[in-house]
Length: 260
Image (cartoon, rainbow, N blue to C red):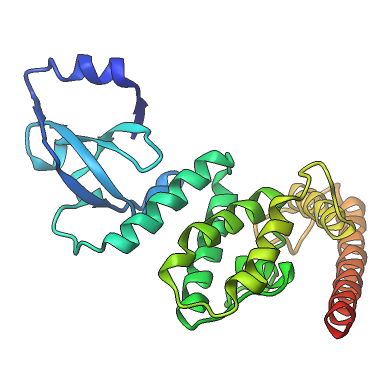
């Protein structure tokens, strides 16, 4: 895939091998990790540059965030998808929210997990009454480690919930969830909580452990770095303990607020 602009597209359209499409759509899906943020989108297929056979055809598509890309392979496009206007609208909104908040690939992957979890809960009629409940959506149920979303990710999730609320039967949404959304969107991105700070430290320690490890299993030190490796692992145990204690404090505060 290569990002192109309108000028590039006009040049491509003069190519003898280019076939322009009118009102052609397809469902996009790829196994290329860096491009998976577009998976599930119903995209506009602008046209195709014909290769020597179908496997070498290069499609040009416009994604939901209005970016135009070329070199899309035929196997990445499903032309005979089942049309679902609600799902298309929700995915379009999510794509534009991800672009607006300028999320990186890791943040997008975590947000997509949160959206999937939210859609499941909302279909069950669940109404969110606390910021912590929305934060928990970012952690996959099979994950051993809890994800602590950034303010940017939380704001993106809050925007998604607000934009898609009309598709669910959520009794109590306006009374509870709207207030939680307002609280999230009013947060200052420059602020940092103690838990966020501790998690940043943990990320740095994990990075150091990886640098001092002899292999990807992280179970053994590189030769000459044994002391550094042991020290960073001790730091990791300490910071994980501090994170657990901080989560307990936040949980206790939250229960006290609900009891009032």
